[in-house]
Amino acid sequence: MKSNIYEIAEKSNIPIVYMQSRCSIALSVRLAKGNYIIGIDPGKVDNPIEEHAIIAHELSHCITDSFYNTKTPLNTRGRMEYRANCKMVTLLVPPETILNAIKAGYTEVWEIAEYLNMPEWVINTAIFIYRRKGLIA
Image (cartoon, rainbow, N blue to C red):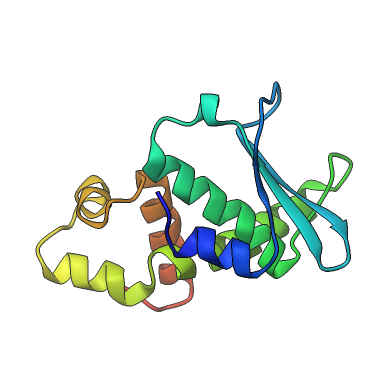
């Protein structure tokens, strides 16, 4: 499944590496200032839609340079995840996309997710962020 997320990664010179991992489904790493890599374990991903969203999240860490490590305090970790999630939802489901789905009659999160061909967790994240920013009611 080749989409704009993969193209953005390619144009940004951020390689996506398929690997096995004991710890996580995916991760992004800052190698040096401006150089990043994304790793994903395809054996832990349910389907191409889920893979696309996971890579978008990791790519968003790279684009926003939002990184932390295991010793980072939780408040900083949460801030970095929020920053990456804000970028991810703008890449995958801009606010007008959610509003258009609602106008089309889809009101439940699972309905919007199916309509937009996105995982439910992406739609939940988008709704949370856009409501917080006052972009949707």
